[in-house]
Length: 215
Image 1 (tube, rainbow, N blue to C red):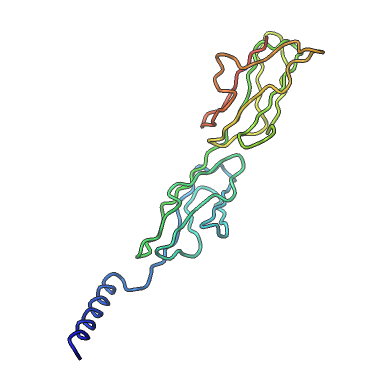
Image 2 (cartoon, rainbow, N blue to C red):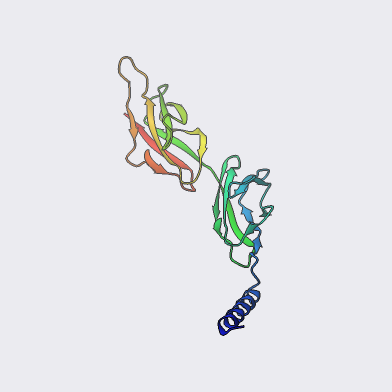
């Protein structure tokens, strides 16, 4: 055996030994899991990994997807079905499996209640009715309509029928001014001291009340 072949054999043996010390040439496989918190009683959330078959988590608990992900491949956990009246957000839900195939256990799914949105109207004359529309950023038409009727010397309030997830961009507008023919008997517009914006508002964790005043 000539010197070149001897060197090649030695190098091959050293490389094989190094692979063996690193766990060999076989890729590891990792399970994907985490925890769900904030779910309301008797509700559930459905999750997918890499768009696969959903798993349903019935309550606040740990979860693990069936099957594994090979080292070097990515994982991406997403909500496929939200719980009724809540929105669940995923953190630490994506990444790439390392060479040794260490299990992923830190996917966090946190659920919060959707937020009610309402209107408060001052100055609306007794018996007069004003109607409001709730419109979402990605909706071409109103999502919900809210009629309110005036009561003497009273600020009237009401909530739209729908609740909104965290981060939703909304607007509230007057759909129909208080009655009158041919002109409205009053005109209602956003109040200067309204606690919430009527246009371009973003839903946070607190209930939303948009103030209007009628003249």
